[in-house]
Length: 74
Image (cartoon, rainbow, N blue to C red; front, side, top):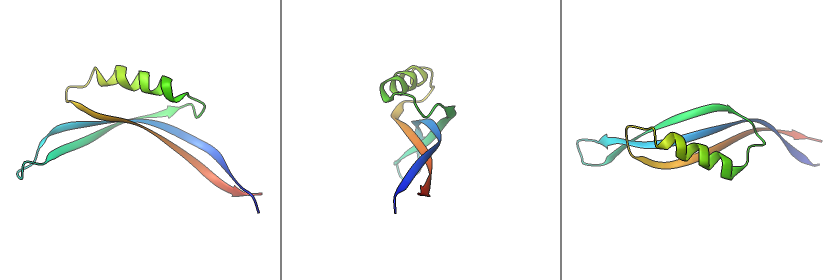
C-alpha cells in the first residue's frame, strides 16, 4: 500500500535569544510567519528569513522551515 504526502502548509520560523534566566541559561522565543507557499524554494525562504532577521531587536539563533502535510493511503 503506497502512502503519499499532500502538502498542507509551510511556515518560516525565526528563533531569537531574548535574554537569560536566573540560572544564566539563554531564553529563546520564536517568530512564526505562516501562509508560505509549499512550493517555495529553500534558498528563497532563507533569504527572506535573513531579511526578517535583520529587523529583529534580539539576536537571531536560527531560521527554520516547517512543512506540514497530510498522509494518505492510495
